[in-house]
Amino acid sequence: MTFPGKLFNDLIMEGVAKIETKNKKLPCVFKIDISQTEYELLIEKLQFGKTTERTLVYLDTDKSSARAELFRRNIRLRVKIKDPEYFLELKKRGDSKSEVFDPISAEGFQQILAGNIPEGNVKSELVRLGAPFDVQCVDTVKSIHQRADFHGGQLTLGKITPSQNPV
Image 1 (cartoon, helix red, strand yellow):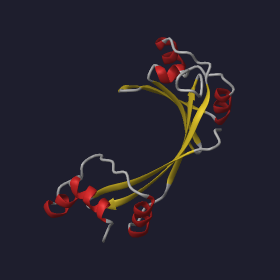
Image 2 (cartoon, rainbow, N blue to C red; image 1 turned 180 degrees about the vertical axis):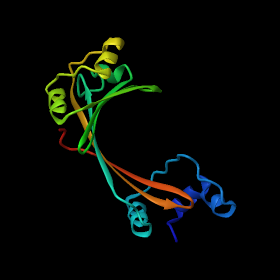
Image 3 (cartoon, helix red, strand yellow; image 1 turned 30 degrees about the vertical axis):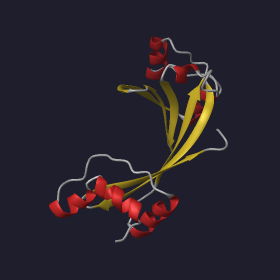
């Protein structure tokens, strides 16, 4: 299989070429930014399984990062929608162990958009942090993931598309 030079060089830099010859496991996670052309070539050349889509709805007190209280305090509050499931998630940036989440219903999601955070782990953590919960939708992002077997491991392609129309 032939890939464009930059993509192939990036894969070599990450150890994929060594893996082919030494039959070692792929690194757990590495990220390579690729062009749309390279993305389409990979889709064409590799056999990807089912596509998974999710929508991430980011919440804060204001759309302006200068006035967004949660953003300024390194707190990320979002709703992850992976039809038919909805999750309210909160994490403190730079602290991977601080993530808390609550499964919510579609109706609960609508309540959040109306400014009502439901009782649960997330609201308790907001209270503990002394953070406001009078939030609004400030951004919406759609992500698409596809996986394929690749040199004894898995290659995941992720494509993130910012929304022009928040929820």
